[in-house]
Length: 451
Image 1 (cartoon, rainbow, N blue to C red):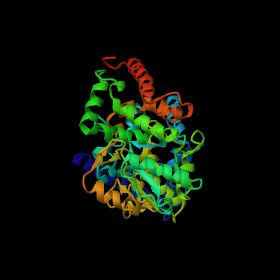
Image 2: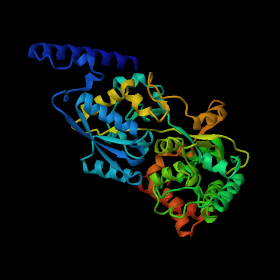
Image 3: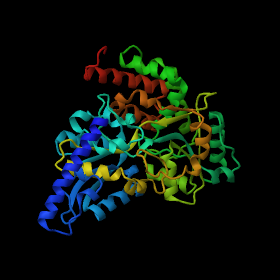
Image 4: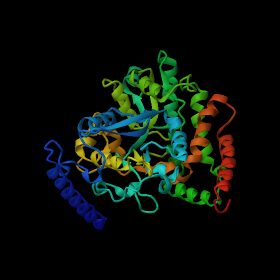
C-alpha cells in the first residue's frame, strides 16, 4: 500500500508539472490549475469549457437527495454531467447484466460493495481501483476487497447499517403499545393495531423481493448463531449439507408467512412498492416495517416530523442481538468505459469532505472515508447504538456467509418470499424443498465440485 501511494504521488507531481507548463505556454489565464483540483491526476478529458457527460445506473431506493446534490455539484463546479438512469431496485441486477453482456454498459453502476463481486465477475467487468489515491483515505479498506486482494468498488459507508423493526412511535403511543421484546409480543402488538388502529396497517411489506428477505437473513443468522451459520455455509458449498437439513430455516419462513395469514401485512403487498412503505410509516398509515436503518432515514426525509424508532426483534426465543449489513451502497466503474478517467475523477472528488459530507446531510451514517462528517447518531439509532453496537451485540447477517449465491437468491429464493404469501401454496418446508432443487441445479450448471 505504501509503495502504491508513493507511486501515485510521483505520478501526480509529474502531471502537475506537465499541465502547469501547458498552461504557461497557452497563456490562458482562465484555465484552472490542475494542482488545485482534487483527483486531477485522473482527469484527462474534462475542463471548465468543455462539459463531459457520463452515464450511471442508480437504484430507485438509493437515489438519495444527498447523492443528487453531489451530482449537481459535479456539473456546477467541474462541468461533469452524470446522466442518471434511475431504475426499480428489483430490475436493477438483470439490467446491469444485460448491459454488461451487450458490451454497452453505462459508465458507473450503483450496487452494494462488495456484494456485487459475487453476482458479477469484477475482474472481467469492473475497473481495478486498487491504486487510486482515495484508497488511502478508507477507514476499513478490507471490507471492500475482492478475494484477489484488489478493490473494484467505491463505497459510501464503512459500516452500512443494522437491521431492525422501524416503527412509528406515535402509533404505538396512541394505542398504548409497549415496544415488543419477543416475537409473541410482536404478534400481540400487531393484533391490537389491526383491531384498534382504525385502518392502520401493523406491518408494511412491499412486493420488492429484496425487502422481505431482510427479515429472513436477519433471523436465519439469529437462529443458527455465528458458528453454525459459518459451518452451514462451508458445508452447503461442498454439497455436504442441504438447505432442507436446517429446520430453523423452515421455522423462520413459517413465522414470516404467519404475518400474512393473520392479516398483519398490508393487503396490497403484491402491488405496493418500496416508496409506498416509506410513505405509510412516515404518515402513520402503517406502524412498522422491517429493514435496514437506512429505511428510517428515508422516512425522516419523507416526513421530518415523523416520530420514528427502531427495535430488535428475534423469532428465536432468548436471542438478543442485532444483525449488520456488511455491504455498502456504492458504485463500480465499467472496465471498458470510454470515460473511465472521468469516472475515476468523480470517485476521487466524492471521497473528499466537500462532496461526501453532502451524502450524509439529513442521512447520518458511518462514512467510508476519513475526515468526512457522517453527522450525529440519529435519535432513532441512539438506543440500538447504546444497547447493541457499543456492547458488541451485533453479528453479520446470514447473507454475508453465502454471498456467492446472491445471483440465485435474487432470481429464486427471494421471489418465493413474495409469491408464497400470494399463492398460499407453500410453507417453510415447501419453500426450502423447492429452493434446494434449484440450488443443486445451479451448482451443476456452473460446475461446482461435489455437485
